[in-house]
Length: 354
Ligand code: PMP
Image: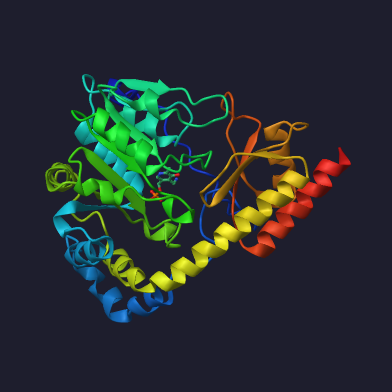
């Protein structure tokens, strides 16, 4: 830290993204990326003309993409705000709807960026413990008097809340915003987007990073009432109106034409997840009921860090969290059949050798 950094950030501990190693090639199952390439329509959309047009600023209104997304989800363009990844969308949401007086509630075990944004913006944190089986007790999030942020499915457990549970939370927090972060919703959960038409205090956030195979394009969005979107747009225009680059805008629009391709891929991921989960159970692992594109698993005889390091030394990267209650778990992205076969045979070797 330099002597010039504002005292506001003295206590800030930055988010640590999953490793993106360049030293050697790993079977990379650590950041929940898709094993499939983007839809063929995306590849066709990115022409040389568009590359030449990079000399021009991108559309600050993201008009075409908003219209295409609005049609896709049966909402209006005014109900959509577009961000540079859903991380940026979440950042604007924390900035807009929380502060010292309006705190934020989220589960004690959830997406690691929530406490970082809370710290960054000087927001009071109300971390609500998961039950001992790592499920969310929905009634703990009713009448909080704070902004509520829930990843659904939750990360890194993959466990889903039902839409009716979310609706109860939204109803009981009528004077506060409820944010449902649906980064992993397309792998077996039910989206709360339809509820945004009924409740003006609900924001649903989604991303192109997982189910649409476009993590590197950095594209996410929030859906909610036009008033909430207007608030977010005010902050976006006060930060970076050109937050989405031209290529990503085009790619995002084109991707919506590849729905059949994504549905097929997502179904495949679900099947590979279920098959891999069964095989892991046969090896003695205990798993949460994940509805995401990752598995959250621990082995009663192994320390999580030890397993993570053993896998890494054998060329397989998974995610390990050194956090109380989950430090024995590994979060394993569901990759291709071949990648999962390598993982399973390596874990078989490691667990049988012990
Ligand atoms: N929410 C959750 C729960 C996540 O796990 C992630 C991925 N790290 C994100 C949001 C952010 O994804 P992106 O910025 O790539 O859209």
